[in-house]
Amino acid sequence: MTTPDTPTVHHLDSADRLADGSVNPYYLEDRKWRVSVARVGGKLFAFDDLCTHEACPLSAGILTGTTILCQCHGCRYDITTGAVLNGPAIRPLTVYPVSEANGVITISY
Image (cartoon, one colour):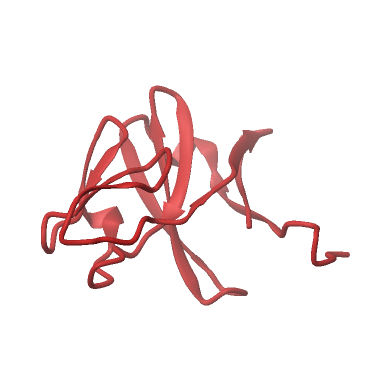
């Protein structure tokens, strides 16, 4: 049972489907929202998939290290914090706790 103080945990995918240096989008049906999970240097990062500038999918952008570049207008974000590195976006991305256990990627929100 989930209370207001207890995060929702969602199992996203098999961990072997996310290669190092790649980004996969996921649709969270209960939230009606898209998130992305990236694996960089063996570490997982989860963040909103839609750019805060004009809602373009970041999962279709270019991942360089821990920076994701939006394909639409060139916004760049730090996926570790959600911070905007280059505009025109001014609002940061929401980032989420993400983990890998028993071969499954899990996100909390």
